[in-house]
Figure 1 (cartoon, rainbow over the protein chains, first blue to last red):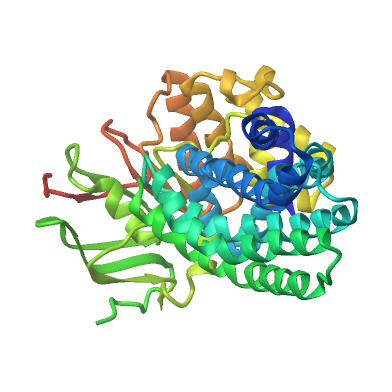
Figure 2 (tube, one colour; figure 1 turned 135 degrees about the vertical axis):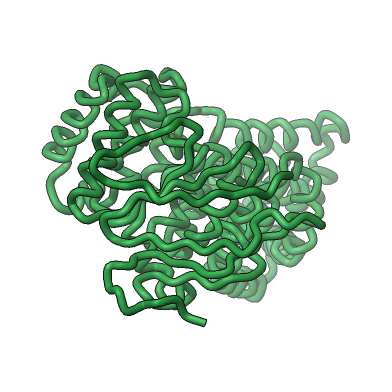
Length: 220
Length: 221
C-alpha cells in the first residue's frame, strides 16, 4: 500500500508517465480512419482489433520504466533489503502501474470506439474487456520488465519476451468486442479474461519478485 | 564448518567467501566476523572486490563459495531477520529524484511513520536534516539537490532507523569536512551503543577508543 501511494504520487508529478501511453493510444487509433478511409462498414469490422492492438502496444510502451528508474537510483535494492515481503511491494507497484497507464486507456476507449464506428452494443463489452485485459497486461508485462531490469537497452527484448504471452489476452479481448458487435454472447470470452486476470495477479508477483532479486544481484 | 559461535555477540560472520568474476578469482577465501560493538573496514584498491564482497554478505549479490551466518544461523534461513536489522548505504543513494527528502525518508524508514503520527515524524526528520545542514531542502524535489546533499539525505537514515548492523559502502563519497565529521561521530555513537559497522573507504579513519579491524582484499580486476 505504501509503495502504491508512493508511485501514485510520482505519477501525479510527472505527467509524461500517464500521458504518454494515453496519447499513443489516441494517435494510433485516429490514424486508422485516416489511412483506411472513413467507410463505416470497414471501420466497424476492424474496430475491435484496432482498439485492442493499440491498447496493448500502449501498455507495452509504459512497461519500460516500471522498474528501471527504481533500479537506477537504488530504490529497488533498498526494497529488497527492507525485510518486508517483496511480492507484496511488487503487487502495490504493479497495481499503481495499472491505475496510471491502464485505467486511462479503458476510460478513453468509448470515445475512440465512436471514432471507429464501433456498433452501439459493443461499448459495454469494450470497457469490460479492456478493464480486465489491461490489468492482466500490467501483471504479465511486469514479469518482462523485471527480467530486463539490469540491462541498459532492454526495450526490444521486452517486447520479444512479453508479446507472445499477451496473445491470449488479445484474442479473447478483441474476440469479446467483435462478438458483442455482432450481437453474440460474450460471457465465454469475458470469463476467460477473468481467469487470466486471476492467474496473472496471483502468480506473477512471485515471478516478478524473483526476477527483481536476480536483477539486483546482477547490478551494482 | 561453522565458525566459533560460542560468542553470542557475533552478529554477521562468514567463512571461506570466494567470488569469481568470469575467469578471475576476485575474492579468495575471505573470512569475516562482525560482532556487536565492533568496526570492520574492508580495504583494497579500486576493483579489488570491496563492494562485491559487501553486497554478497548481505544477500544482494551472488557468491561462489562460503557460508554466511547471521547471529549464528545460516543466512539462508534468517534472511528477513538480517534485513530487518540492517541499514545498507551503497553507491546508489536510494533517493528518488521525484520525491522530496522528507518523502524519501518516510518511504525508506517505514517504522518512523508507523510509530508516530505523520507530523511528529516530520519533526524528527527535520531535526536530523538540520544537523546535516539541509533542513531548508526538506520539501524540495530531490532532483534539485547536489550529490553531496543527496548523500546527506540517505545518511540521515543512520539516525532515523534503529538497526544493529550498518553496512556502508564508501559513505564519505561527495561529502565535505562537516559531513565527514558527522559520519564519524555517528559511527562512534552507534558502536558505543552496541551496534556494529562494516564499511569501505579510501580515507584513513581512526575511531578512538574503538579499534578498527581491517580486512585486506588483494584481488585485482
